[in-house]
Length: 387
Ligand code: JHZ
Image (cartoon, rainbow, N blue to C red; front, side):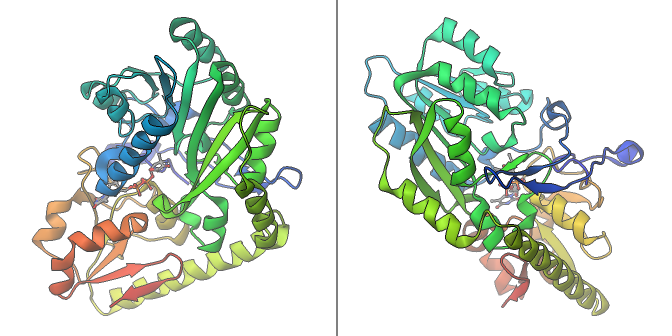
């Protein structure tokens, strides 16, 4: 597999970086993770292609998170909020806007700059235990430590958790969310798996990780975003009441078989079937002379196009609203990425919905495509044409 967000120009094709995407799971703690890991600097840098605020739905989701934090978690006299992977400030801009002390930590300079332009105080760096000590001496302990769609991206998680242990006030909370392993397996959303995401969390693996650092999960809340996520609330062990939801979810994970090898054998079988169905459909449409365009040059689409073997003769281009991706080619498969305006100017017969996690937002704004006779191709949870 190539770098999922490594959109490139033809002059870079010859030197494109590839690695072996292989996933394993631990029988002891239930952690699911990549075997070969891509060095973070190859993925997160001054030309990072993913800006969180490109989805209006996500902007609402993170405003609600910021409101929740300000309402329920910032009771001290001069509260302090730290966020890792703060991207373009989608959440912290609201905390900053309320005049509260905050610090974003974001290793990709271009997205960090977008946050700073919005008035979000941001440190361009990777978070670890050492950085945590620096933040502590400069700002003191944090009431809330946030991480949305970032924790699962960090290879040295023990260092991050050790840093959080140091930085959190005695009654402080770590609130983080990531795609949930249970949803990935249930929906056969294998495209959630790519280089940036080193880990695929379930409550069991997170609880185990927390325990090793004197932290515990005190609550968790499923989130509909990004194809099914889980928001975990973690505190110093014994500092907060543990919600009954925790025991319930652990039992649910057992029932789902999330920690059994057979579940992953079935997952693999479902993935292969999904690939065969999708390729069968794309080949049929191509033979009928139909135009198919991809919608959303997502990180996830890099897994789908490369795993299935989707080539530019099957998908003409991928439409995306992110300027830094436009005019480039998709990683590995080298499908052109074009501005959204080109999709609208000449609707294809079919749009392959790579940004399926934003389906509600996208369907609502693409009524004209449908009215013009356009049809959606989806592949999660099953390959089908939406009439
Ligand atoms: P989207 C990224 O994954 C990377 P991706 C990362 N690893 C992660 O975990 C998640 O985000 C959170 C475009 N678009 O959100 C914008 C349109 O063109 O599914 C984006 O390029 N029109 C950090 O990349 C892409 O689609 C639209 O109407 O899989 C969506 O990317 C909308 C809504 C989006 O994340």
